[in-house]
Amino acid sequence: MVLDLEDIHRATLQTVMNHGTIEEERLCQIFKLVCEKFTQYQQNDEEAKRNLDRVVETINEKISRFDQTVIKHKYGLNEIEYYVFTSTAKTALAKLQNCFNEFELEYFKQMFTNIIINERLCIKPRDALNLQSNLNGKVTKIRAEKLTDLWITTGYFYRNNDLIYLGPKSISEFAETIQNLGLDHIKKCSLCEDIAAWGITCNSCKTATFHKQCIQKFLARSEKCPSCKKEWTQSMEQ
Image 1 (cartoon, rainbow, N blue to C red):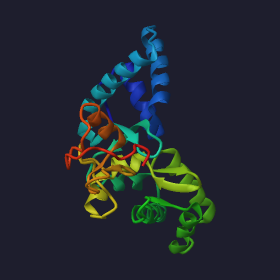
Image 2 (cartoon, one colour):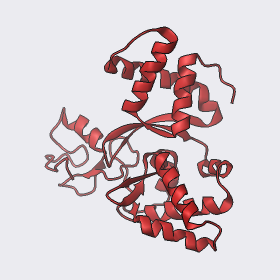
Image 3 (tube, rainbow, N blue to C red):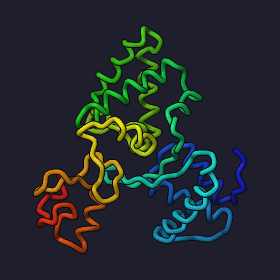
């Protein structure tokens, strides 16, 4: 991939690509060091965040022709902002074929599927590990453990309270695939229309679901549900 990028843009892109998924705060600190190295310019955190967003916007203009983008994603389970390096190709899963063999890819698919069909979008680590038994010994338990750890590190999955959840990278990269499954427990945010995993549902109409950050912004200027127009009474700690 040959790109005409300045040093700061190139270093920022390489950082996100290497991590797959990286917390905004961490990337921001790296970005400040990169800027200081190439320009000798020091920034405070807020200034760095604004400049980082502008740099990412420029990066996306350059890499879009390769069916790639960097997405800023606020993850519903921990309310942390992440930058996610994402494939926008229709066959996003196919790009994993360059990193894993067919049996390892099948293990990923089985793990992904079992998480998706669970209403909480999670699986117990033991159950995830046992999926390798479906592959006739082609993926050992030791290899399955290493793969799971790798996919958690890169953001495809997220581990919390001894459960493995759908991660920010999977939600960003496979959003269309997930939505096309037509599962009742997979809701769209009624405001931004992106997947609202672990979203907040209106207490009155029981149907409108929102990202926490989306409904908080809306309620800052209105006290009613944007869908049913009734008074909003649902706690934000749902």
